[in-house]
Image 1 (tube, helix red, strand yellow):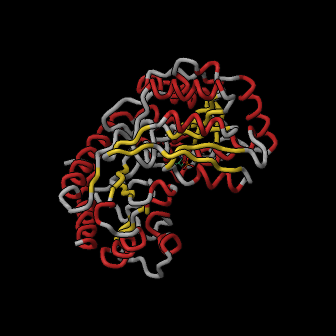
Image 2 (image 1 turned 120 degrees about the vertical axis):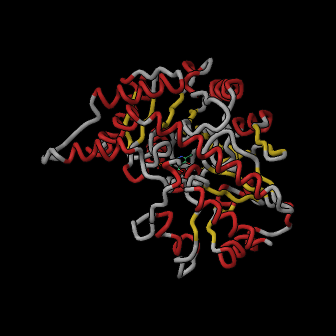
Length: 388
Ligand SMILES: Cc1ncc(COP(=O)(O)O)c(C=O)c1O
């Protein structure tokens, strides 16, 4: 029996996923709605995390702290062993999260009114954060054929020609679950060099690999000539987003210095005691837990694919990465408003509508399958009930 089969009640635990749906979906009573939307798993973190935090709690003083060499060693070892990527510890800057890291990078390297580029569909903060900082968003759609997404480099080059200052990449990609190839990344890096554009590579989903190995943007040919900032974190991998921890890797010294100055300007004090403890623990001892998790998620995905592809007008492919699936319902002829209405009122199921990821997401829904199998079965039954 897998440890991931165990159900843990999360309602009334101040969980955004379970307790904040009224606000998100504008429904007063969400007590019977099953949430399968935000990228937050219904699984407990690896037990090493609670052990490490309990151990830390035995020390009664909680003074100022910092991510020491052991924390850095744990994370660089993880990337070395898991992804064959050597990170120089002196190039790491700590942040409260990847979204705060994105905000910091945009603030540091671009000005009000500058153009920020991205390919759509895209993770919503990629546009919300720059817009809140009064930057202009410029998008280029990825191409899509039978659920497979790709860059159209001609279209992408036009985006670069439009005068963007920074391009935000999602590597691996949320919501489409793509693991970008080394070749694609090299071409992208070349464009960044040619048009003198900063590359922000959000690599938060790097560990949730379903069928392909991921390539860090900073490891490709040409990366040392480009202005690349990679954002990494253990929070998706180990389901510890509420602990808040992320890192920017900035091997380019000028970029590192600029980010460090920005941190000083805002009085940013890197990570708190629990985050330091957590990062060290999960990166040191979380590998086996993650391997088990990935097998479990693969089985869940197979189930969703078998069940949903049997419904007329619905198609879904198993992604290369992430625990999210991108459901194509264009064949049903339903509008987004109709399908969301049916899912929420008849099915009592909360999924993400595709346009949350930009207009390119119209006709799609995002479902999070990182939950116990019984919960997943319930969710799929609700989906069918809503549609059939
Ligand atoms: C691509 C991507 N970046 C960042 C985040 C959130 O990062 P954080 O919680 O560290 O701010 C998510 C969460 O779903 C994500 O999918």
